[in-house]
Structures are given as C-alpha cells and as structure tokens.
Image (cartoon, rainbow, N blue to C red; front, side, top):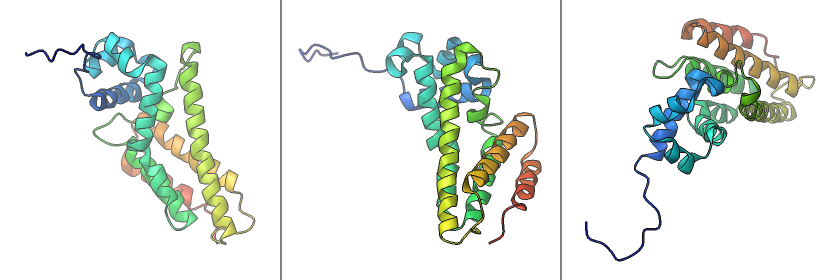
Length: 202
C-alpha cells in the first residue's frame, strides 16, 4: 500500500458500528443488562473489548446507545401512535405496537425496556435508572397527548390524562412480560382489545 506521507489520524474502525449496535441490542434484549456479559456483547458484535470501549464507551454507555436505537427502531410504534387523530386510536395503536414488537419472530420475546432491568442488582442500577426515565418519558408523552384530547373534547371533561397514560403503559408492560413468558400474538392482542373496552366514551 502506497504511503501518502501523512501521519495516520487514527486507525479506521474495522467494523460496521450500526450492525455492531444492532447485535448489542439483541443481546441486551434477550439477556437483560446484568445478564449480558462483555464477552457476550463483544462476541455478538464481532469486535474486541478495546474496540467496543473506543467506539461505544463502557457497558453502561453502550446500553444507553442501544436504548436509543431501540426507541428509534422496534419501539418507534410509540411515536407513530401519538400521531393518530383520536385518543382511542392512539391507545389502540400503542397497544397493537406493543403486541407486535414483543412477539416478533426475528427478535427476542418481550420488550427491551422491561427485560433490560429484570432481576437487576446494584451493578445494574444505571440501566435501571435509564429504563425508569425511558418509561416515564413515554408515559409523559401519552399524558400530554391525552390532555390535548380532553382539551379538544375528544375525551370527556372528567377524563384523567395521567391515569389513562399510566393505564396504557401498565397494559403494554404487562403484554411484554406475558410475551417473554411465551404468550402468543393472538392471545396478547385479545388482552389489548379487552383493555380498550374500558376506554372512556366521548
């Protein structure tokens, strides 16, 4: 290889960072934060620990990057649901998205946002904190959307946006736990349908 005469600024990454992050997401999704060892992660990512630290930081920083990727990818149904024209359609799309994402045949069962922190001890506290903030943000966004629905008379005046947001989040999280335990897509969709029968009439 002919030299350019310039000193190297740094060795180029010999791997696809997006693909490596995708593989790390799958490991965390399947094994949780504490269950995923650095050996598991680097093995799935196809890189050395040194390369992982250089590209993504430590395990905690890698998990935060994975959570961002999960939010923009498999969990992007949440953003799409918020754009629906009515509160009922928002709730319906949110729960349908939860059912779909937690039962995809090409992904681990359940939800990274729920599985990630199960059986988490002290060493998993940073991940636990990140996931609590992640779920709180999702609930807050649902609450704001449902408040808008009250203001627009799409929900009755006495409807409680915070309670409705917490209700939908609780059902969605329960769907994720049931999916991880082997419940099928059709079984979980029936759960979502049953939950929506309690939606306040306009």
